[in-house]
Length: 150
Figure 1 (cartoon, rainbow, N blue to C red):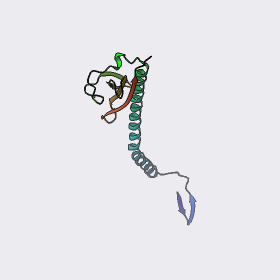
Figure 2 (figure 1 turned 30 degrees about the vertical axis):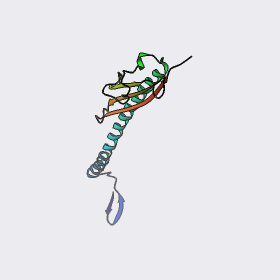
Figure 3 (figure 1 turned 30 degrees about the horizontal axis):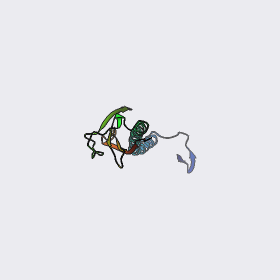
Figure 4 (figure 1 turned 135 degrees about the vertical axis):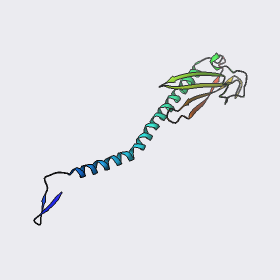
């Protein structure tokens, strides 16, 4: 701050006044309040991405299990309704996985002899409720399992 004394400019050694400090802190607070919604949004997106990644990992684990088992295994039997690959209310098989405090429903439907004889089509769904939005989310994949003939 410059003070004019006897017509000369001289440097004031008194420092900042209390009013200047209050104005500076007020401007800083307004700037940080402007960033708060962005920070909250980023935290929510991070949580959503973590739950989506966990769901994909669960789905991949079930796909790998299907690939590793025998064609006649009970884990991939059809319930008799061959038109239900997309049926989530009465799936052929269901399981629950709880990870990071989130309940993931793993559902899979099997269709025998599709798309050809001795091939099973298996549709796997992972369904969960997103912790940040409360919305139900779903991912799915399609697998094929062929009978091994020797």
